[in-house]
Length: 319
Image (cartoon, rainbow, N blue to C red; front, top):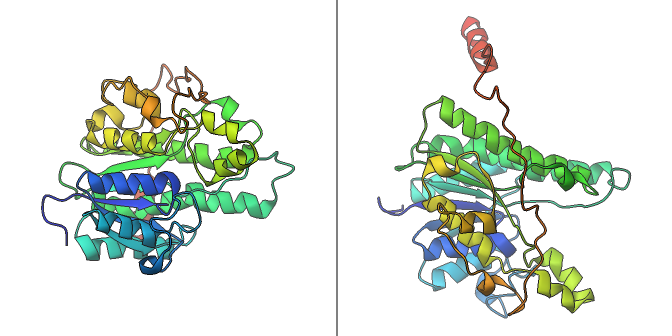
């Protein structure tokens, strides 16, 4: 069990890359961390240790060992986000282990960038199951516990701002990722409707490409590509800044890591040089400088409220 002052964070998709860095930095900042993903290994006999953080040798088992050997608290729990029963079991084990849950970070993701014609149905289905469906399941399973969090539960989703250029050349991928951002917007509205002012869900996306297993393929072919990459630590710094910010400042927001860190709520950071993979380089920004406002003039006009859940409950009562 965690003591009454120790917050517990569940990081889904924490075996390598950004997810690993988020888990490690949460632990460094006093969180007990549940490290969740599909990949496990015999961390006790891992050589070298720690493994390359962007390689298949980095697993939830090695990340757990990294955190524990650095003096932190961590528990590795395997999960298949495509299977809701597995997701529920992961959350149940989290509560059995620590007795509480304060933060959910959903970083799991499947990727395939190609035209609609060149995206096979199986690939499309995999992305939808891992990306929006996996997120939805994780949110459903964790919400009852996050609502009990003292100080308010927080959710951080790795998904992008919504703008049309994002769809180009990767429609199937974009459908899922944008769907995740729609969940962020919609659940934030649920929190507001329900008066849960101390809770927040926020989407976060890199403004500049981040070093990962995917970018490794590019840099292996052309080492100069590394000049346009940042370290995963910028993303974890933004996650921590979001968790420190007031709920009202981040609830329902679709943020970019650099832009949020530059903001007053994110700490007014101005020096991003330490995050460059190649010292002295100025990585190219891949995201738009200005993003569209998704609100409308009639934003607060809900019309006639419909609630299918209430109708369902009435039908159950008749049975």
